[in-house]
Length: 417
Ligand SMILES: Cc1ncc(COP(=O)(O)O)c(C=O)c1O
Image 1 (cartoon, rainbow, N blue to C red):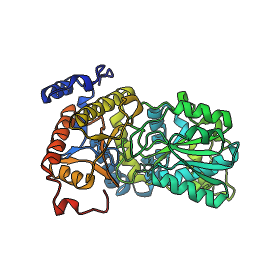
Image 2: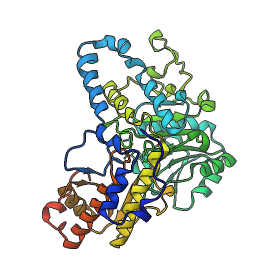
Image 3: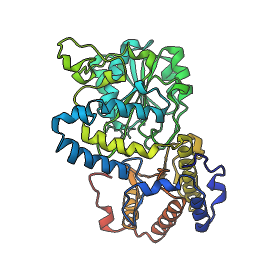
Image 4: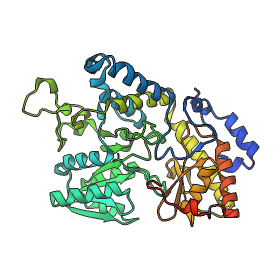
């Protein structure tokens, strides 16, 4: 696959459906789509929530279940490489976020990992004993920050929009998303790290909406600690485990509050004294979910020979097209206009947004809704086309124009929105 990407933003160039098709014909990433097992007649715009299956993920999962587990049984911990799978995948993921292989481990959930990171960094942070979290942050990050504060006695500071740098100047720990789940706004990680450096604050980055779609560079940003989902743009599957990144220089000082046997330097020595591994795998705790890891292993093949910069550029261009069409029909765009200030999704503020997403779904366009009024479209560049965005916005315009969303069926709330 070629690594060059479109230099002209479709915001300026795509004015018709035919032009969208031409953009697809010129798209160097176009061939990646065939490797995804997407249902026919579905335009999938929810890769920022749950990525679809890559064929290699389904294959690996099947082999893991029917061969390694069913036939290899317990011996597969050695023969199928199960024991090292979480570190192996951490190493592969490191390449996608600009980190060293031994700085990343795949383990647990973002919620659990935020807690582990907070506990291990508190003794190293300087300044005010506080854990900061944005008042607009994804709820689980807020819950963990509050529970951590309650347990440790540090204060939990809810940071209002625009006050990030004031909070950073006071030190402590700061949980921060690189891309906000609701607005899609991307922050300048380097600027935050430079501010943190001055006060001795430590930032725990949540990369859930950034990993797998943006050209992240932990080293260049000076980022020290992070976690993130693998079930979104990394397409690891429902409930796929999260990852932890910890900068090499800090590793020896980081002590997980959940020092389970899988993070021990020699788990099969069965020694009662805990000795952590030297690499990021010191953050592993219990036995890893091998079936999920096997799916993730296949999913990560989608990124082989793909430049993250090319993915970021295409996600930005798809988003630009969406914004241009949204503005043409006078919709309220919540996401930043500049592609460089966004992650992979675009959020629109739409009155009656929930029934509108249901009406879109009925027409084959899957999106999601965040209460009270946010419709999100995720533009995963590996399988979405410019023509998909064009058609989406045409259908959305029609649904709004005809009010076809206003039926009792579409108003019926599902558990997951
Ligand atoms: C920004 C962000 N952080 C964390 C999570 C949830 O992480 P987990 O379920 O792995 O704890 C999500 C889920 O959508 C998210 O959007």
